[in-house]
Length: 537
Ligand code: G4P
Figure 1 (cartoon, rainbow, N blue to C red):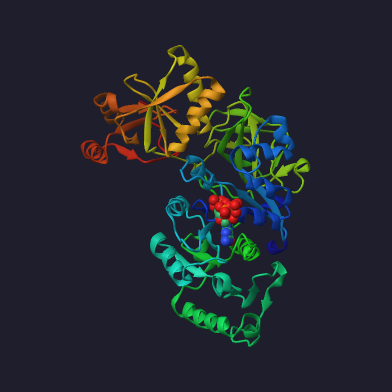
Figure 2 (cartoon, protein in one colour):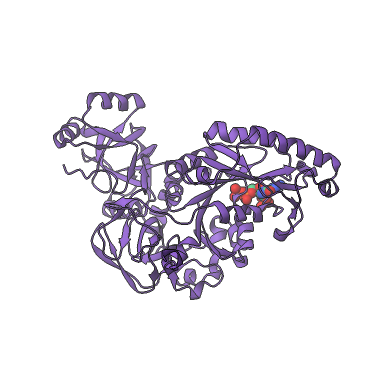
């Protein structure tokens, strides 16, 4: 009988969500691909907004009423579109050359990622970094080799590079027919379809098999011959797509196309629909949460300040993991036990933003607040539960913050506290009482900090080099060892924003030394919110 029982509305809604991000090295074509994906999903009015960068993007985004009301630019943070009965949530990751923690954290909120490669360049530095973050959570990755309309590298070489540099099995799904100006389309190796380059989504041409003579008519004898040879080689030498291996994060299906020419994008989207997983079980303390559960749970992965410097309002981006969110709910912030009213959640539906009234597992909603909600916070309907997996990364750049006007010390403290809560930078207070230290993963974060301190808080500040080039969070089961360590290293230790002990090092050699000298301690490069044992000193 059980098989006849319809799934609950929560389970059914969760099952039709696909929440993903696009990871790419700058210039690989992420923006262009995003635009084309949104067009396919009918979110046409959004497509123009994606293009605009920086300030231009902000001024352009006034189409969204909520932004006018609140002065918050949320337009491109989450883009939701529907296609074929599925709801796609595309979470934007900042596309800077420089790395920011925002990007890392956004990847904790997705269930899959599309990795865009420039066909002429293959895996680039940023691709690799972003991939490593996906690997930490075994996020399934679909590869889109973009710019096939231009001079491209050999597909075999590209696939080999993915496998070698990322240690990830790669299985071609589409195979390019012809190259560069001779590029004629792709051959679907799994479904035996030919997709001509100028066809729209419905334009794929099913053939009996690759030896079907119609292929010669479609692409010319030369290209057909080349395809047959390559397909045979691919079959003999490359991996075959395996859904399970993909979902476990060990294999990537590879699509070829051109975002600019809107080619292969529909095929990629079909791949996302078919292969990418819906929201799954999520690890938490003390238990795992299933998406079909009736009670709502979610976590904050990003906080964005109001663009209007006169308001301290912020939007916390909450990824829902179970249950249903409706307007006016009150949720428990587990970290503090406080009730958080969700009176006007921001829904990111592309088609009709104003009427969306509910959100489901896999969806992201924006919750306006005055700084109560922090990155890593878990929200529930009352249960004591914390999600794991929203990480802080040991910053690679550590700077003292120096005021230009010492009278502003108090203001600086408030500003730094608020900006740290928002996740703009990490903030450390040295145990010896010296100037506060800010830590960032990339230089760009420092520029943002400096400009926001000045513009939003009226606190001009400068950064001063420290003697340190790395930091680690320090934990131990042995409290006295922690105390002894802190005492012995007062000049090189501090507390993070949550009062956890951190140690600063001038070199990797010194870090190793400390690890040898203090075997009772553990030195962590990644701190998961609620993932470290609580240390009380
Ligand atoms: P990004 O967000 O990953 O940084 O890349 P973006 O989409 O902005 O694309 C970077 C450049 O590559 C753009 O050119 C874009 O038009 C081009 N591009 C993207 N996809 C394709 C493709 O499939 N084929 C070809 N030939 N080019 C592609 P640009 O000249 O830098 O900018 P624009 O003037 O075109 O905006």
